[in-house]
Image 1 (cartoon, rainbow, N blue to C red):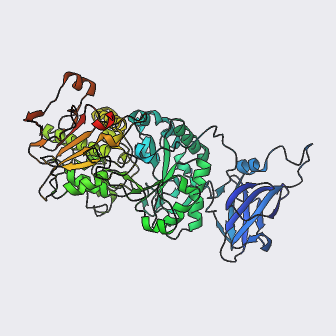
Image 2: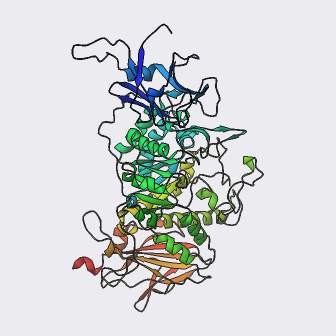
Image 3: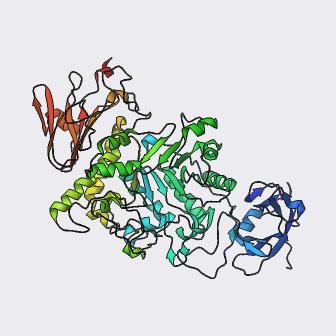
Length: 636
């Protein structure tokens, strides 16, 4: 080394990783054992290190080795000693780094970027090293949208698979930039939040298989955005630009994190804080069996953003002194998915189970409801296959869950039979309606809105092909489904009674004569939860929900006939002067314009027997009715 550009001094210990400090740039790493350790700085692309600096006792703070890099011989300026080019710019644009521990080179687990992973599913000759990412990013006036859970429409997607197909029509297919270009599509659909499957740096090549999703991958670097998901050299900047564009449209970005068992707790918390503070991410889905739930919910930074887990123990949080009255915690589990699937496919004994899922909200938390997600059938496959078809995974169809609760409607897989196709569309409409009318936050799996299929594969974890890439040509063939989903989202957003801020209590807390939610059977006020029942009516009283200007919502009655024969349902009697009008029918896709049906007094399928109104329900169908005016409570 002939050049002496830098000098080195003991650091301050924290924060971990690489950071700017007043004296220069600090490198801090956790090393619990007393081993020989060196910081190695490489010029980008060079094989030999330009600097190999030992950590000594004076650099050690507990189990943290910390060193500050400074310019050597900085020329003094009129007002001080700041060089014309900052040290952070020099390091970011010129150098990479590793740590040598007892002769073995290691990458910093806190590295904000990793070299050698720029190409997907490719092991090149470029060495793996930590990137130094210290240059500034212009966030402008960016702010977290901070959407309430009850107002969210969540959309789960894979960064690569979302736009990798040639039909996506974007520049930089399969990247963060590709997603950014699809924001207008998502906004038009009605989505206001996305959840990215693992988008941090992971090794997708594992033994003889591909880990397409990224869960449980080896050589994971949780602080770095995945370089192969970027269309340019700087994945960190491209991802920040994507988040900024989402926020500009008042849309949120959440990330799915799977921490490997044994990961250091401090590292996991530092990691999530890093994504919030450096990338402005709005929330996370995390595996709390590895990262302690109490640590997450009590963290000063993380407790202020959305945290989603399989389960939150309310008593444990209470014992830890954590208040959950206005918490941003939410549960993500397959309870709603399984019970709703079984109810829609007419399994016996499912009426009460589904009804409870319809309004369920855990104590001290919100709930994410979904019918499909990354692990399992797509919505189209759910109504097209009775069993999984994972033969292409190379595991003799032994992988993937056996409990799909699906129904092929008469033919396994693809068919041209009109009766089967019509029944499949009804089942899709039934499922989506119950999802978007339930009280939890609804989540769509990317592509379900236009009938995306994985050919019956319910575990395509090793596929990087047309099975896992969205074919955007289907948006034309699946236009009917997409328009239906759009209308359902509009219907949900226009009726606050369908997404109330507080948990429903099933009692008459307003003394208006009707509880906030009540269950009914073929006869009103007489729900049939017997084992053989497939019929359910649900009345949501509009007096318990108000819009942004304080006006009461209309009441909504949802009549579900999951039986394979037509049934006659009584309609609950409304307060004096109010009438029921149809809003949605799923047997044939019908959305009624309320202004027209009220003005013309149109009431298809509704008939009177004395004072009692009845509705004739077709097999395996749902009808939604809306009252034409708010209850008498609004007139007081």
